[in-house]
Length: 138
Image 1: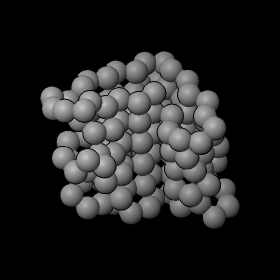
Image 2: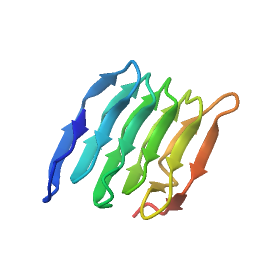
Image 3: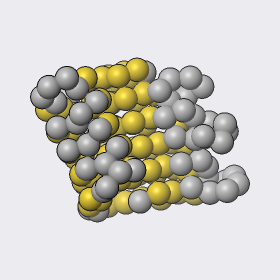
Image 4: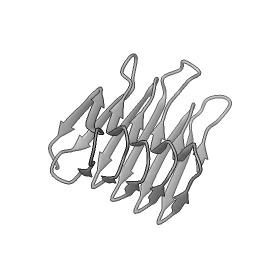
């Protein structure tokens, strides 16, 4: 599921109780000029379970991924260039690279609720890669 808009204003997308079974790509993708909320959703297989990025350089993409799960994937939650992600209650299981990944730069940060977001990453995978920050649950 991909959200994007060719021009401003940002498109607003909410996804609830959805399932993305992938062969490559991203399960839930907030792209340029978009705000996305994914709640109680699941992504399996592919590159990124939950992805937000803004490759157009406007740095205006925002996403919230909540009470969701990504498994058998390369990266669970990924904030690419130009986007910020907030993750709460997200479970990442069997990711081969990163549980939570932030590319940094002008944006590209993952803020996650440290008490409710969890990972199960056997092998060489990393829980946190790049620009990630735990925040308290409020």
